[in-house]
Length: 443
Image: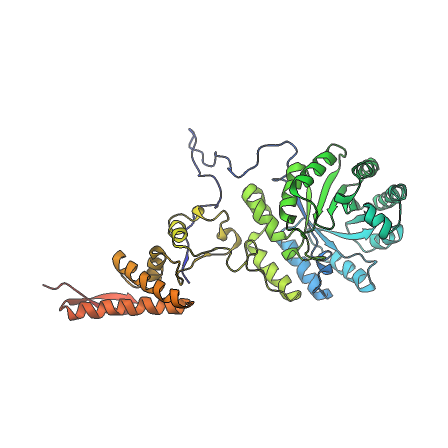
């Protein structure tokens, strides 16, 4: 492969300068949003829901051993909370919840339950650190799901919250289908649960219908109504989950729900890796100091295998071509300075970039790098000539790295043979780790 170790610090950051005292890093990140006293883009917490929302993914079946393996990996990665399936879902779900609670992880363990006293009573006995309580508030869910009115919802929510708090546990109350709920009903309900001391209120885009602007407006409005933390949960049906999570933080949300690879009901929710790709650009110091980013690929591979899917080719950070550069003009710039065409630095995630040279789009700078990796010597004019040969074959059919390497080696051998027939004396070159001779002008 035609890789390169060229780096220039944290890709995407402003060029580092020095002030009059000689101190570096005084220039602000140009990708930082305009300052806003409500924004939490550099001070947020992740509630990782692979073991709850992710278990609702069509292909998911996590046995106890797999759940424990995933929980330990997420904890080592640095997530703040791990959310697991409600113990009311099944007897095995209850046992798995208890097993994870006994692991002694740094992350707090939450379980997600219906706004029902029976669910809450069962959950508090499992050893969890907190309960995530939820009930549908849109007219769709009130009519076609649980059949309760807003007065009943508020009364029951307060009873469950007070019960959980009496057990010394954290409690979050979330509406379900928040963005299709009546705004007045929603804010009135949130204000009521805030008054009884809920730790967090949650906004859930349950059907993935919200746009970033809608998210910003609702979260910012809610921020003026409640004093507690605000958690957000975004489904990805219309492809806005990452953008919506980011806008929620800009508007004052404090917690984001994620799952590994975004797995979950239907198209899933905000992916852990995708969110951090966005946030490491905005708040690099915060993200790099808090999360062990080099573990991301390992965790994604683990979950992908567990649910029998491949990591998408265009997955942020870990997709197989995420740091691949193919076009000639791109390759030249990347080889000179990676920040020209990379907003993320692959080294931050324990990965490397790859400059593609086996195609009709390749440029001679990429081929020159490959020539050096093969231990060969050519002038720039010779590299340009062999690049033309690679392009000629690539115009006829797809070519692999071996094809391009073969063209390069054959061309170099031809140069060697030509120099010998010109009656020149040899000198030693290194080719593939072996000494080779090549003629030079003799006396």
